[in-house]
Length: 130
Image (cartoon, rainbow, N blue to C red; front, side, top):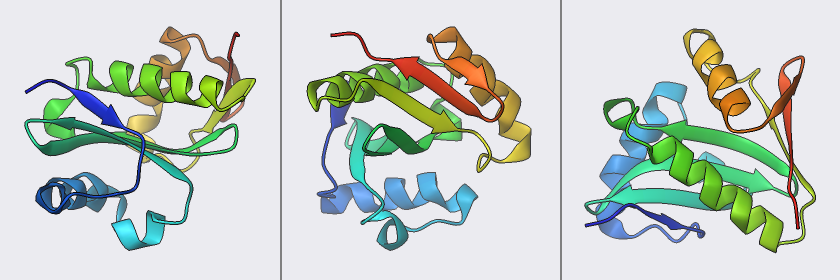
């Protein structure tokens, strides 16, 4: 099976367990996030391995399962999410790291900078080219 990003909050039943494991470290459940914005789910082997939630030009939540990090999943999820945002007419993408767990903020900051975001305090901006 290949890595795929689904741009929908429609959760297939066999994704529930892996989605709950992904959200658990942040004490979130899918019911809290259902109306937070547009969902972008990265799946591999019928499991959710990453999620981004966007609302307008803001990426409100971004996470990759601990067990699957450092394998390109975050990169692919970010690229597909930015591509989707561009197609929706967004001119930029904003993400804030203030809600990230403190131990993960340095890695998230380095990740965003590596992929072309510029930093302004806890906010990061990426211009979406046409």
